[in-house]
Image (tube, rainbow, N blue to C red; front, side, top):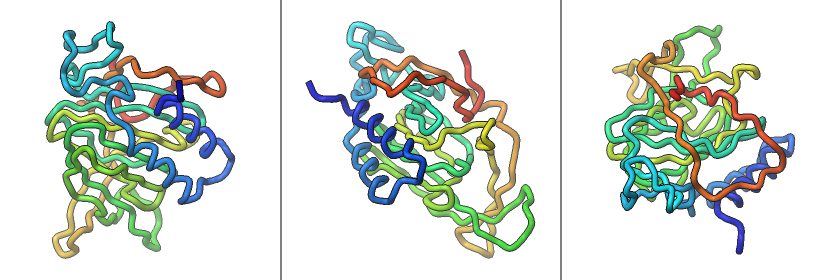
Length: 242
């Protein structure tokens, strides 16, 4: 039997993100093509609601799409160089505007539709302050099967928010992962559009939203053979509920 899709993705991420240098655009494009072939079933999620249990079907080894009543993160793998996981959102839930400091992020919508708004910073010759100018680069509804998106440290929509229009799941690859220790925290923002500058907004830092709670769910997809043991640390997105 050949390698599972998630094993192929892990192997590629390990090869590219653990090499001690930034991947080339060709290598990122290769990863993007791998993500484009993923379906929910490949990470252990039943998107069609055939499960008898509202949360999981242990006999089939699947998580059920209709069982996610809150924002849920399915942790698949995390190491110092990259992380792989799936965000599942019920309809109407919002993940507020947040950044990805010095990170490359690949995302694939596995099912559902989501409204995405994303900005990149506008470089200005000024001292650092909590209020900064940003340009909008994404403002659209994305529906599966939408091609994977890629954001970079300074382009591609590094600061984004999303709102689930229907139940949806998003497969994410982050490199490197969030880390307070290595000065890569997740920072949240509020945006104030500038009427005289269409497509631009002032972004102001704000505290972690108190109502942003991310629940965890066990990964039930194909197992991964890793290169070494990994430590499961804080993802950094929000308040994780047990």
